[in-house]
Amino acid sequence: MTILDRYIFKELLVPFFISLGILCFIVLTKEMLRLVELLVTNGVSLMAILKVIINLMPSFLVLTLPMACLISSITTFSRFSFDKELVAMRTAGLSLLRIAVPVFVFSFLVFLGTLFLSQWGQPWSSISLKKLAISLIQDQLNLALEQGTFNEPAKDMMIFVPTPEPGEKAMGIFILDQRDPEQEIIITARTFQMVKNPQRKQFGMRLYEGEIHHVPQDGAQHHQVAFSTYDLKINLAQALAVETPKRPDYEHIMTGLNASGWRDTNMLRRLMEYYKDLGFPVATLILGILGMPVGIVSKRTGNMRGFVLGIFIMVGYYLLNVLGEFSVTALLLHPFAGAWLPNVLLLLITGLLFYQASRR
Image (cartoon, rainbow, N blue to C red; front, side):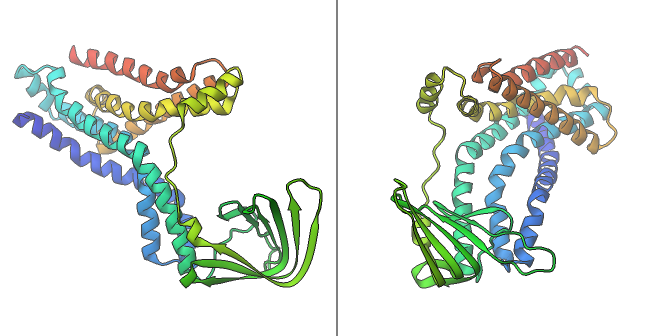
């Protein structure tokens, strides 16, 4: 790299990290209320909350890295244009294409980071979050069962706690236990309390005044047992054996589509997501270059202008993705076209703006 390349590269770094921090904070605010509730209501430690945030970061960064790359490019070249630095570079005989070399290198590095996070970071994140949740169950005296919704504390087990009326104590619980493939068990109880055995990695609930219904798979018999006290155990040692989630299997998707005559909308979405695994990180490369002509032609009124312009462009890009998904599920586009059409349109716009900026 020449001195000029290093200078442009360094100028890209500052707005990149500033915008990345702001964007991650904005995305994190969506989860902040739930995290505060865990901290205040359920007694989860601050260190555990920080671990949750760290495990959420790969998913956040996949969304925010392309946006930060675009905003950084817009802001940097907007300043170059306003301070006449770009004029000095062009006067020295440098073409806009030559000036774009460090921008391309920068965008390529961000692309590699986005690709790594989307392919390996997010699966690791989901595994780590599940292990952390199980660890919290072991460490806390109670299991945070959300009222009014179905909770799944373990595989093949569903728990529902009704939302109490204002001023009343929570009463009642419904449990669907499908861990035994031969028969499912339905348990209802009037009240319950949490119990645990950390040494044996067991966690459970002590149920009071309820009924147990055994329903075999063949449906031939139905057993009902009433109880005054019943201990329901959950073996956390089995839950800790988490397998790495696999990427969508192309052959399986194609088999399902061929069987449905390419009309299964769920399989069409899965095939589109399969193509997007590479398509979305590639957009980072295009967005980084797009920021150059956008920054050059926009008059500089402060760094926030570049931030706002970047947000508007990303909103347009995400709308194109939504339109592509709608077209695929409506059987108007092939999943490959739906996944890559936003990138193609973005590339055409980038090429047109770059050509116009180079002729200025």
